Length: 79
Image (cartoon, rainbow, N blue to C red; front, side, top):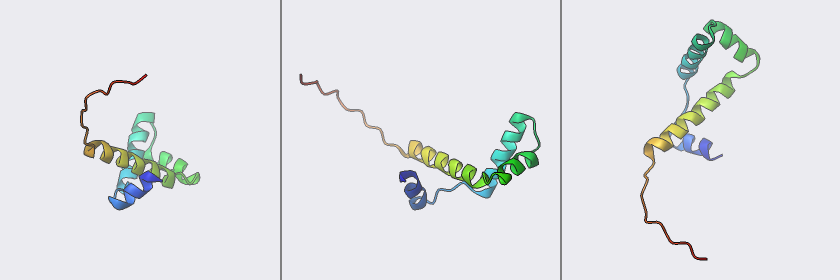
């Protein structure tokens, strides 16, 4: 996948701390304890999936931050 390759080349990865912080945000949002959220994800082998999702988000943020947008004149359509 393109995002995986870019993450590897640019050394972009969601850390364990990033995941832990996200679990804390989720717990606060849902009015639950972070330990409950972590247990839920752990029991379903979802922590790796969450970390992968967060890595993809970081790749997208990287792309947006480093995008070079160039305005060009509109080309007339040929019919």
